[in-house]
Length: 384
Ligand SMILES: *Cc1c(COP(=O)(O)O)cnc(C)c1O
Image 1 (cartoon, rainbow, N blue to C red):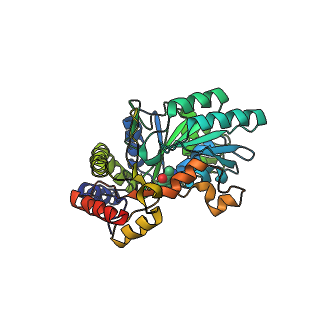
Image 2 (image 1 turned 135 degrees about the vertical axis):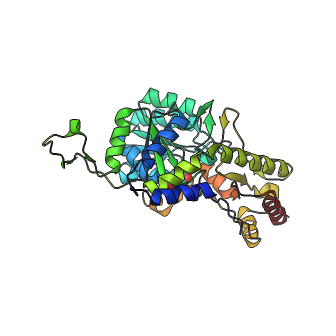
């Protein structure tokens, strides 16, 4: 089976992990801060806070922004459930903003209309989680202008987008947001096996997230309230154990060196798909001029009126041919957990229409031209 995505682990990655294993520190050593600093520097952000997953980092980000009971978090329905669940972890309520059918990202005009209505009803969100779907930046200029106008905070869920750019700035620079979160899950652009990273330009937010990541405890002399003994530490808030390990940060540091090469390779493969599929009846992904996508996913849409076959048929036929196609994503509001909260079909029509047609083709640095030809042949056979 050719999977839709797959990590690449090189000998330098393996050597880096082995040398971390032989060092004095398995969990809290020098490699986690190095990973935080190097990624922050790459993106042009001031601070990085590493965590054991992007899901944890999203939770830390929401808590640091003060999200809690009685607040609202809005996100895109076309995302992994974690973008919305982080609101539920904080006992906030979650709502969605429909996607733009061309970019597949949150529609900034739909957002403007929804904010206007929410303001009248006194239910403005505290946090909006903006997802850069498939690695292509959302319309951050418009979204951040709206956020400023309505006093809303922005988290960029850039789980797909490390290595991408928007209007010349690296995604992660937080030029248009309070916090940006990356994922280092193996299927994403670079990996630390499991891992996540929150970037911010705000020192207080960074310190708050770092405290929450490790139980809410501190040893900093200037922060201690009741004692100054050399063994002494204090817990100031209810935190978690969301720490990244030094062993895995070693892998992250090693992979970070190949980030640009990986994104370039993803562009080569995607360009070749575009070329090979340009005369097919499929709807191809648009790539916005203002952004350089990290190309986490290569998604096509199958409109049965144009192709004569539906997505399900194409999916099943391709899987039978050993092609690990996938679907990203079932709209979050249609997940049973979210239906229990009152969501249902018809609420976000662009997201639902996209979902009916979506198919993700294999895209990862190790996908050879021969493998890509196999994918195309299986796709053409499935469509005929
Ligand atoms: C993968 C993903 C996450 C969660 O990442 P983990 O590191 O697996 O927790 C969050 N949001 C989006 C959009 C993702 O694709």
